[in-house]
Image (cartoon, rainbow, N blue to C red; front, side, top):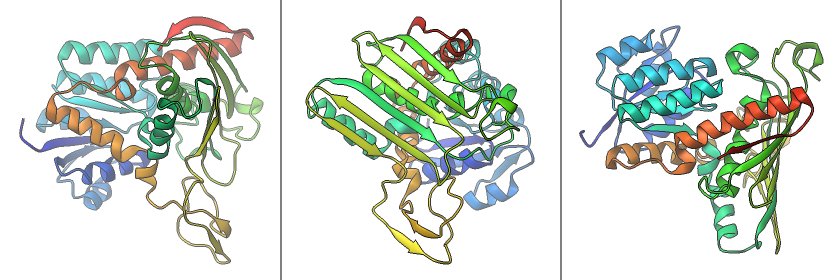
Length: 354
C-alpha cells in the first residue's frame, strides 16, 4: 500500500458530506471515487472526486480502492460491505451497522474472513467533549459511575428511507438512539468486558400511533434502559418530536460527582438575530432570535477523528479500537432489536451484549 489511502464513497447525500469533509482533512487520503443513484456529479465536483459511478459494484470492479465509506440507506449497508470486502477493501459503515442482527454479524464475519477491517462509525465515541468527559471519569473525578442518561433527539428526518421501517430497520430507536447506545457501551462497557445483561424498550408503534410523524412507518419516540453486569445502568432516548435543532446530551452520575455534556447546543457562540442567518446546527428550522451556532460541527460531533482513526489503522495495519470496530456495531444492533422485543412483550429482555 502507498502512503495515500484511496477512498471510495457509496452515497452522495447527508452522511457522504461529512465523510468527504473529514477525509479531506487527513493528509494521507485521496478521494478517488463515488457511487450513488442518481450519479453524483455535483457532489464529486464539490469534493474534487475524479471517478463517478451510478453502481457501487462497478466502482469496486474498476477502481483500486483501499477503504470504502458506506453512506447509503441502512438496508444497503450489508450488501455494500460484503461486496467491498470481497473486493479486498477495508470498510467504514455508518450507523446502524445493519438493519438486522444476522446481517450485522455476517458483515463482521465476512470482513474478518477476507482479512479486511470493518469500522463502525459511531462519531460520539470520538467527539472531543465526550472524550474529555470520559478522561475525567477515568481519573476518578466523579468516583465510580453508577448511572448514565444519554439522548439524541430532533424534529423528524430528512431521509425518505429513514421514514420507512423496512429500509431503516425501525424508527428513531435504531436511527437516533443507536448513538447513545453505542456511546454507553463504550463508556460503561470496559471494552466489551462489562456486558449488558438486561434491556427494556418502550416506543410508539409507527404511522397513526406516532405522536407527530404519521407518515413514518417506524416509531417517532423511543426510550430504553440498559443494565450492565457490574450493576451500572443507562437510560437512553431517541425521538423525532424534539423541535429547535438536534439535541444530544449525556449525564453521568457517580459515587463522588456528576458530569454533564451538551454535544450540540454547547457552542461558544451566542447570537441574537432578527432576520436570521444561514446555518446554526443540524435540524434547526430557524436562526431567528437567540441561537448557539456550531463552530466546527463535523469536528465537534466526532466525525473528523472517527475517520482519521480508520485511515490511520489502514495505514499502519492496526485493528480498530473497540469503540470504532465491528463488535461495537454488532452489539448496538443486537441491543436495539432486544429493546424492540421488550416493547413487543411488555417486559425486560435478558441476554449478554457488548
